[in-house]
Length: 233
Length: 233
DNA sequence: AGTCAAATAATAATGTATTATTTTTCTGTT
DNA sequence: AACAGAAAAATAATACATTATTATTTGACT
Image (tube, rainbow over all chains, first blue to last red; front, side):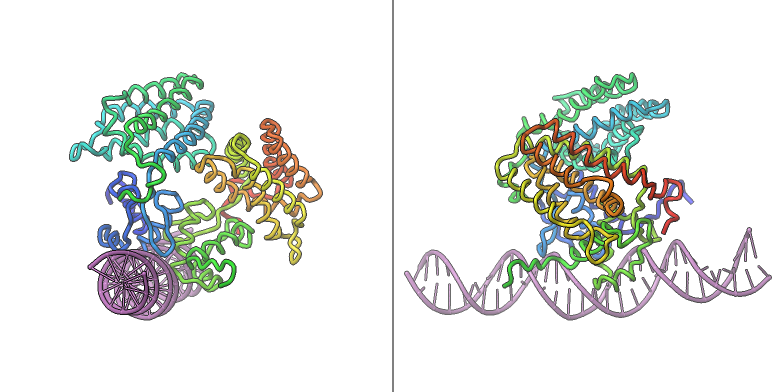
């Protein structure tokens, strides 16, 4: 048997696929999701897709409209601002906690994930307008490593929820911001402060990091506003 | 047509029923959920029950064991402590925010829900060992009213998630604590401080309130510990 | 002729039932 | 205690009926 053939549920597979399509904005924010289309596109059964959609709805990545089906949750400036504020609260709390509890293994993981991330190009080689899946995954692992030593499962769960939400905004932001910011430096700053157990500096660096995406997107004015939220397809 | 016959999804109905059974501990923590039993018990189809379970799993009220089905999430002392810590963070943030933004309507709603709650007996008339559904609902509405003026949808969403989680612990706690605490006074203290716009006092009162349940349950030592988490059915 | 509204048709979501496959769990034997 | 086989339960696919929404047409009225 190969290294780790995770033979997970077909439903779980459908969920993962659908989720990653949404996070990468291959399914566009606000777009109607026709279940039968997804059934043929993903190759899973109707039930599997339905179950996945209902889970995604409870996580807030899609919205369910009773008797009308599902659509991808819209992204708006005001939601991004709210999300960022909330993320700052949760993520910094996790980070503080992790700095208190972290050991050598924690530090090592931060160093290694930070290095790996620094060596992966952001843009997808196939489609430079998109974020590469490898970078996304590496970025996720780095941020996870930073807070891995946090001893509160609930805080971590909330953090993960919000991190995923932000993913879609990153998908929109990253193509814009390569020349406007130094993401590598931001990551390095957080990592170094965390390992130096400088809580103040680490939290401040994290806050800045999270607010950069928001700032750039708001300045670029690429998002729809609240009012016309539904009409952009 | 009658006043408000909410003809919602059958799946949504199944979800609500299942959720309320779990929150009221009619389905005991740790218990295996046999899907076919629930299908006959609830009277909804297999698909509806499955979809509900998968949603509840993503909310953390049930845990999914691949190919083995679902079981009600266990309640443990350490989870309660973690949950309480996290709730204090979120709930106090919401409250602070609400106090900043609240208007007369907000104050009025706090007063009315607090009064209503004070006039409902905690114990279920039919089964005094259980919390009455009416009290539960009224309690939920009171806490919701307190934070209703908070302008962050994400904070409110997280708050609601954690509030529901705590419901099960309340189900276990309330029969114990009628003689050990004055819940009414706790609620009144929060309400009054909130309306007086005394952020410090309100937050402190809220924190105390949330920690009371934890304290009582820990002292009563009624919960299983981490290790034997799964074996109690 | 043009506009609005009701009726109809088409599409898609919702709900149920049946069946097959796979995995886990139980049971009896060695 | 280890194993094989049986039973049970979860998972999966599919077919089909029902219901709700959306689009289109028709027809009345201005």
